[in-house]
Amino acid sequence: MYSNDRLFAVVDLMEGIEGSRFEILEYKEVKKSGTPLRQIRIVLNEGEARSAEGALQFFKGNLAVKTKPGEGGTASEILRKAMTGILANESLVKQPLMLPVYSGEGEIYLKPSYHHYQLLWLEREEIVVDEDVFVACDTTVGVSPVRIKLPASDEKEEKELLQVKLSGTGACVLRLPVSPQEIMCLPMAGEKMQLEGAYAFLRRGAVQLSVTGKEKDSLTYHFSGTGEVWVAPTKDVR
Image (cartoon, rainbow, N blue to C red; front, side, top):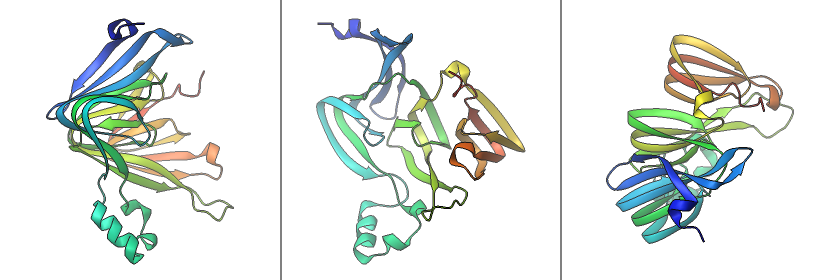
């Protein structure tokens, strides 16, 4: 049996808001093609944290877990609308994400993976990331859905690209599509940018996104405005 310090090492950490700490663990003996297995651990000391749906592997300590809405509405408002039939007629953009919130004292371990992770601090700002990029955050950071309509196709069902907006002040954990060394952080100053494919996974500031094209696998992404876009140009080069 390995003791914890022999099993993995803490390779990065960030103190959150009021009793939360987010850590990136790397397993020392578990690798795939040279990439170590990584895991996110959240340590709470009478604090709170939120994770993506389905991200939890296990936790220990005196912790409570509740599913709470992010930005976009309250639980009572959702129930009222569902009972009156209003919810079905409203835009999905107005519906909040229902995510697990952990509170108390203990350790939370999210599911391990061979992905890369980034700890990011927000200071009264907002970012928009791809759905699978968001992992966890302080509860002082609002989490809300951003749905972008995809070009019309022959199918009757309307297709949407789901992204996640993180806003406020606090610590966030992001899952990166490539290693941090391969990411291009491109500033934008009232200009336009076009990508042939889904290589941009984060935007911050006043940057708008629209999508054109006919085939799902060959869409064109158009960015405009002022802010920053994170691009992973090596994502599909393996």
